[in-house]
Image (cartoon, rainbow, N blue to C red; front, side, top):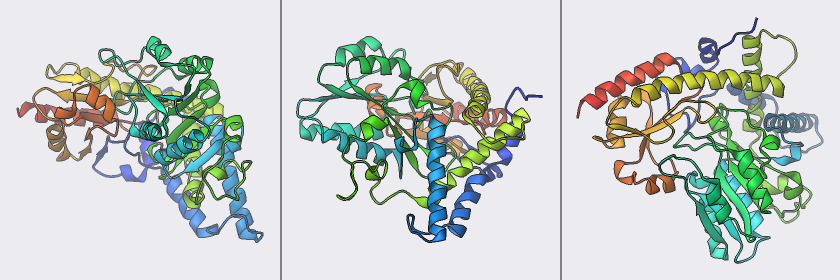
Amino acid sequence: MTKKQLDVKFVRKQFPALDRNFVFMDNAGGSQVPGTVIKRIGEYLSHYNVQLGASYEVSAQATENLDKVMVKLAELVNASRKEEIIVGPSSTILLRILSICLARNWQAGDEVIITNSDHEANVSCWMDLQKLGIKVKTWKINPDTFEFDMDDLQQLLTKKTKLVAMVHASNILGTINPIKKIAGIVHESGSLLCVDGVAYAPHRVVDVQEFDVDFYVYSFYKTFGPHLAVMYGKYEILKELDGLNHYFIGKDETPYKFQPGNFNYELSYGLNGIFDYFDTFHKFHFNEEKDNLNREKLISNFQLIAAHEEKLSMKLLDYLNNIKDVKIIGMQDADHDNRVSTVSFVHDKFLSSEVVSKIDKFNIGIRYGDFYAKKIINDLGLIAKDGVIRVSMVHYNTLGEVDRLIGAFEEAFAKS
């Protein structure tokens, strides 16, 4: 019989770091990892820690094992082939590499559109192209609704627009942007779409074919894995680009041409632990012992996750919405179709830094600041408040932890 809701006790048993008196609610900065990830990293270092591509047996096995990881990653995001998957140290570096490689085919006067809602990883790399004569425009959210207006995008697009770079879910607002709809508008104009999915991927299934994005990037250390990132790119686009690797790495060597210094072997192998975890997650919640994780099962998993996270968000937002001195920076409701469980706010009587410092003593990890989404903090006039107070929850958080946080807020807010 199917369990109709996420069993958070089972989930928490899979994460060794949660076995302590501490509440992790800075997950948008970095999530905890299940024991399966730790085990897999150790497994690689114990059995396969050699250079790839050699003829001897251990190297051949290591090469095969890591190739299988790339196949799984392609399945994870629903890419059409493993050559569309580029693994690197961070989303920031992967986007920087992409910007350099794309710009080689652009000319002075060409245009890029960024947004004021993005993390700088998907901003600075494009802004720096202004040195080459590339014109950069900014698509801004409505400061009242915290949403993007499609008409504003239409007005920014021209025949010279080469690319639109934007975030799937804001790491400040938590808002989920309608990427598929935006992709249609962007492609109709003849431009490319590059999406930062870092704040979306921990909470929802990524489907690059359904989204119809040209590039999609997110970080594994924020999606229950080691400190790595992945970039998807449509193969027909990637194969035409010159890479950033050694001169003898040919154009046909995708993704290797985009991986100078190669990728981290043991951490990449450790990604198997994420698949192991979600496989165990599905078997437990849906009472299925046969077969391994597939995309259909992953979707079922994330339906449970989204429903659980909505409950977490609802409890916190219901509390904050009833505090007269608090302003939610983002949507005020918890509907999982519109937002992820990242909640930001400011308090009229306190700096954001003051509130967070009051919470530290409760062994609860939350954070304040701009979170490298500097433009939106500036545009919303929040620099003087030391940015926002951000509570970022994932599916291993509990309603009891939210209650504990609310109790801490009540004490902190009372001391005005």
